[in-house]
Length: 300
Length: 300
Image 1 (cartoon, one colour):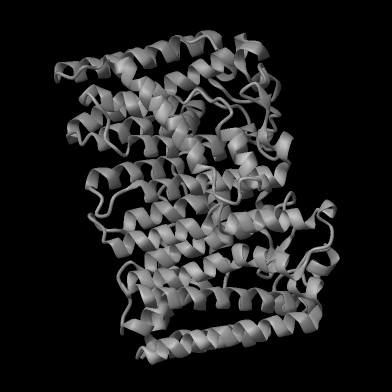
Image 2: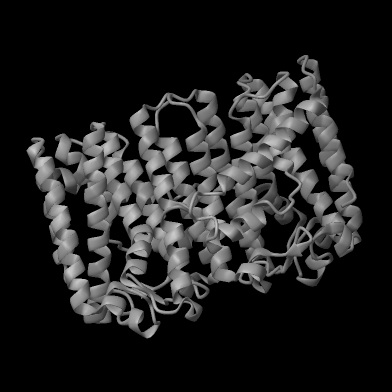
């Protein structure tokens, strides 16, 4: 039943993303074409699925804001990729198996398309909520705004840039963890916490979801760094070995492959422990746990 | 009394902007330094003042969300300047009498600082509202989100870029009006409408405020284009004659100085007519009207 439900939700998400980026009269504007190119260009929709699956641990169906809010999560993820790929940032010309946004639409339009998707994420949530929204709905919106902002994902990208500067010197494993905690983990954790907020779970369960989200985000990033080292472009969909070539500070380039595998094992152990405690509370954890296990074990 | 009230409000705004961009532990991060450099670097705070003054037409004091919401307006205005000045966009190295953000902090950090301020605008509104916000408060938030987005200001910048492309050919006065209606006018109108929403005015008054905001925004932009032509750097605080040199399509470069002056007279007449109708409704229009007249007559 969870699978059938998820199929419907993922379809509803795609429809929502399509509709939310098709403004009457402006469809042919370069900035909208660029935004749609990146947003609808075949992402794995990891964050929306985390939100949906978190909700499905607590109920047979998802709260009505789930589709719109998960669309906003994906818009924010998508904008961050467009801006990160820019020549002034990571200068990556390949993303999701295709040329990155600025390679197709030019730098100026790519910057604007990123701005558009970030702003649209909030327009979209604000237009989808009912009058007199509940505390749970407000908390979910605040969670996303804080995770995406200058004390979350954006600060993580700022750290990443600072660490690339030769003046930064030798990065330690804890520098890499701090950066990943902000750049990747905050948005992954927000996806899970938003599911918790929307499902109106008690505070102690939110605390557990926060721990799970943190371990999930770090596991995801460590796995990403490992895959960058062992993949080729066809399986990865973006430029492989880029981290090493660019002198990026990742779990693998700083701690070595063995160090990265050890860190991954440690985070997945925390993940499993978090789910054990949720199980003790009587929840059906498999919708989220199975998916997270799959992410950690993925090969591309 | 209006003057004393505005002095307090403007002081409260500066304090709010300062506090909202001083996150404990992260103050020294490049992205926060860059954001504060642009946000706190001496803007005229036109949009916040429009919001405050609109509220003061309807009440002796302003609704409690006014300071936080006007701070978000200013954050969005500030982010748009940072991104517009980037080399890939308008490539302007001078802003508000100082080097522009990317000249001081580099392009990557400037892009991130813009993203940070845009996101912070929403974080800031979401954290300032009470639980179970009223429809008026939600409407004010939606107004800003729509005005700033891909069907508003961002689309205007997209049009501006398209018109600079030699492939666009000769721009007509109506092309320039359409661009200015989006790029400048939407946010100015939003400032006035947000004041109206927060003051919970009836729908027909909102419609009048929308007309006034539209005429105010166009007047402001036409005046800006005129000043670009007749000023020097010391009085203007940014690179003068830049429009002409860059082949920008403005009211002056497309319609000539006389055409621009005629358009300005037409918009200010609409502005005055809108206020006449507000006066007929019994409102004290001088707080907003006097200020807008001053903006239209400004010399720098």
